[in-house]
Amino acid sequence: MKPTIPLLAVSFFAADVQAGAGPFLGIYLQEHGWRPDTIGSVLTMGAIVAMLVTTPAGALVDAISHRRALVVGASALTIVAAIVIWLSRAYWPIASAQIATAVAGSVMGPTLTGLTLGMVGRKNFDLQYGRNQVANHAGNIAAAVFSGVAGWRFGISYVFVLSAVFGVACIVSALLIPSRAVHRHYARGLAHADDKDRSQARAQSVRVLLQNRPLRLLAIALAAFSLGNSAMLPLYSLAVAADHHSLASQLTAANLVISQVVMLIAAVYAYRAIRRWGFWWVILATLVTLPVRALTAAWLTTPWGIAPVQILDGVGSGLQSVAVPALVVHLLHGSGRVNLGQGALFTVEAVGGCLSPLLGGWLASRLGFPTAFVILGSLAAVSLMVWVLPGATIRRACDSRRDELERIPDIDVSALFQR
Image 1 (tube, rainbow, N blue to C red):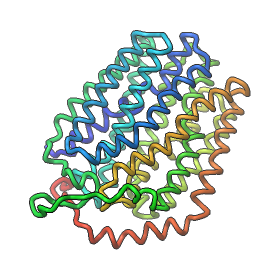
Image 2 (cartoon, rainbow, N blue to C red):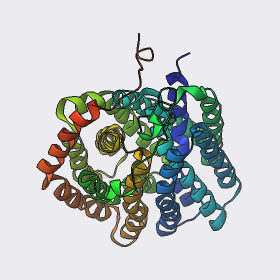
Image 3 (tube, helix red, strand yellow):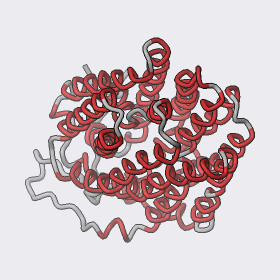
Image 4 (cartoon, helix red, strand yellow):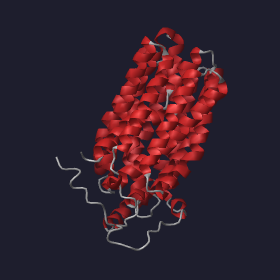
């Protein structure tokens, strides 16, 4: 069995580990009398922890060789969190479980990047990571469908039982990856073969992150995008469910399924788009989806409005899920700080993400859902300004690295991609 097969399985089952209960948690808490601003405070608390943990998690992935153990640990946290949410209705147990879920998701992101890079190398990273994301979105679709059925047949609390099951499956899949299939140095973006080069492998200073201007601009653009985008799905689920109480779990599942199906399709073609048009144009296209999605959500707060709102989300998020990690690898490969850079980028992005539910919940409580959507969507102007104005500089920086990267040795993965 090719080692990429259990890697795809990890990506599939990691969907619930990374997302946790997602918008189902908001519906679950709303059914138990929680206000939108209180729900937003719990989601924000988890997001703040995720923001603080992601950069150290990336550094940890760079530093250790046993990266499969991080998948096991993150999955175990998700299992515990799901059990706590299933058994408790109190504020602090729910908040603690959300924090545990946030830690698990923060660790899983850079860990999957490191595993993929260490298994297939730089040249094939976008191809394999695109396949990983297809599996991940397929896992999200399966989790959403099963969650919708479980919520309808048994009650929405059984969504958290399903989350625990996915966590167990993720652990089993990680243990099926052969330990020697993941090169410990290439996994952090450092070309160093132990069997041929006995010198000590040293990574560059962490200043390499601060000195990389395209990486800084990408982080700012994604932070503003996340501030407007992160609260959109849970708020839209709440807005539609408020008028259709009996269909709450089914509508939430439909929200997830539609966006994840489109994300899956976008991930299939993401690496082709990157190689044809380049990173800058692909990421620009993802940023444009936010204001269009926000206006659509404000205008169509109905069950059938789910389709256009979530299609737009799927296009933007699906392309970003491959293009952003691939661009980080492109910018930092050779430094030995790829996963740290990935974690640092996620941290800056999480600054927007952790404030988004709080901002969205506050706006929805005082101004109504349509106005909240419009205000959140207007934040895309910041992302577009940061990305478009210095666009030529970013494109030149990406192009100048291509010749440099060609001179860096890479992993021979011909056997992995043979048909």
